[in-house]
Image (cartoon, rainbow, N blue to C red; front, top):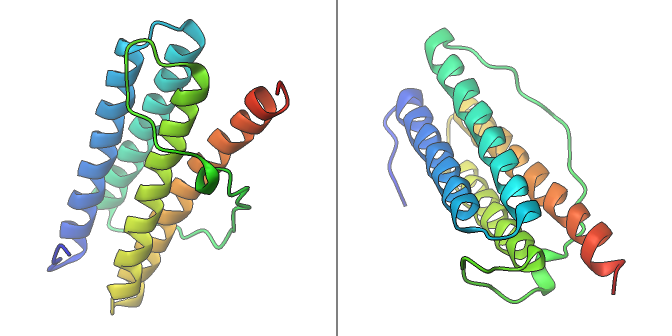
Length: 151
């Protein structure tokens, strides 16, 4: 697991992860033939850009507000098979891919929080995990409303 020497290392890592998520969603949007799928990926690329901007702001200001909120988990992603990105991916497959990505990001930040000894660092990782769990929930709600209810 990656070693961090200070809070700036953590923020730089998280900023890089957010940029990777932006790139991921923009790439999926550019490859999507389906208009609805393209729009969803563009929306999430924008969300990840806002998270990156927030992290940059935290880095510049040196302070951040922690959320103690919890996020309900529908656990839909746990029961779905993995899918590979493709140009003709269905909306269902796009949602599955996004859920799995957000779940992986959540797990990564949670594991980093478990390893953190500094309470501020632990709280920062838990806050980042919370954001990822919100994304996953949004994709699960979308999946529930547009895929499961139609079947």
